[in-house]
Image (cartoon, rainbow, N blue to C red; front, top):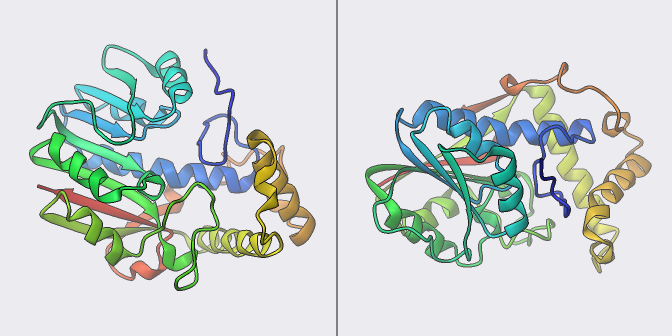
Length: 273
């Protein structure tokens, strides 16, 4: 089985959770795919745009007739193809600009925690609209900037080009879709507070390193360094590795909300042509 050689904090790797925070973040990704399984019609042809490690596309293949996972990282694509590839689920690289399929190729498209990485986000929305059938469904998640950044502040996550408010996300997605509904993903009170605390800690760590010198470290080391800094600065035992978090938390910690989106951790956009 292929394993990713270059691991970053942006890649969710099931089975390689290092901390409680890592596992909670994994569940935040997983709830999006579980929601998609409920929304996508059985027998659909599905595109997972920005498939990453591949576990989400594999989940979608349980319901879809065929799933294609696309990612700009050839190493991630190779890993996904070896680990999850099947007659129903294939993985392909693309250039991050033009989706390599004809118009109206898919019944549904998922793209979770991706748009914040895209330089030309309007082209991203337009390309998704191009390859989607009508009627079709495009599901998008992205972090809610209202809970992460001060007004006018640039993302502290170096992989994020920008982050979105509910209104800002809707405006971009209307480039390719006539019907855009933005909802939110929230957590139970204890987990919600844990995630908000993590954001405050990351903001504090970023303020202590205004020149972003931490990003000069080798990529595989950075997540571990940030975890160490969090433990040293905040002395938080919840972030210590070596614990079994799967018994403590489950996907039921997260749920979709339609109102009060300012309190959501992530935004969930449901788009139709």
